Image 1: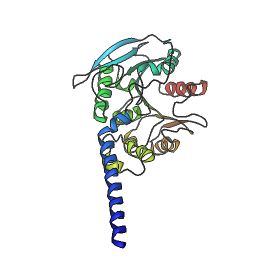
Image 2 (image 1 turned 120 degrees about the vertical axis):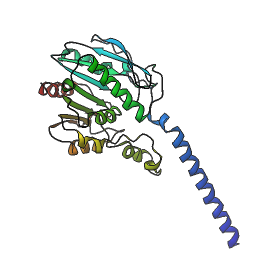
Image 3 (image 1 turned 30 degrees about the vertical axis):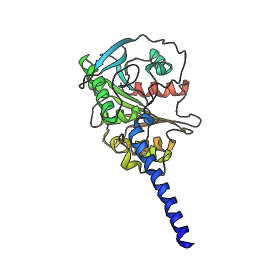
Image 4 (image 1 turned 90 degrees about the vertical axis):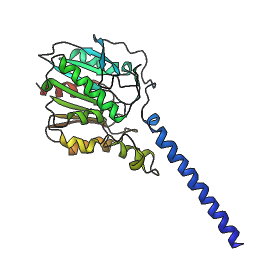
Length: 272
């Protein structure tokens, strides 16, 4: 009787281990589908109020990226290089871009590979290449490095911190930044060895230490995707000069209200 019970118990644990292994295999091969959501649409019907030129930016690995370029004065004004998050198209950022109309800035926003009709599949390495390509495109346009402001939104903060290390950009803006993708994944998958399985790690907390230009961190305390403590941690370990815009009620999609726009505008003016 005891032997029969023990055999059943062993069989039960073997099934559990087998199912757990299947889950790990699934997560390993499907993880980028869980991280990148190019077809997700968060906003509908926003009208673009700022003039833009649609441009094509070619990467070193021969992918053409769609970009929106707004030019006021490339010599006089700072130029924002905008890296968007892990979901949606450029149209989903119209409500943000419209506010740049009243600011003395130029901007270039690029769509990642696999997003907004671009070819290719997103990955950490690929997004770094996309970001560098956008940067090189601006420099070829005559924009000086010290006149560029790198803006990262959510996942885009991983590219922003990576490219801003040991650079002389005018400044960096990080909206809802995470400490690392490993840290973020552990919250959603606490029983999975994400440190071993995760392909795209985007280690912001290590790279922010290598940034020695003005930084603005923006984050809402009720963010349910990237916990507020991560943005606060990034601010704490960032080098001076650093600034924060923390709110009590904003979720992951921060409200681009009068207060946020004023904080953004004040930061940009301080760079002149």
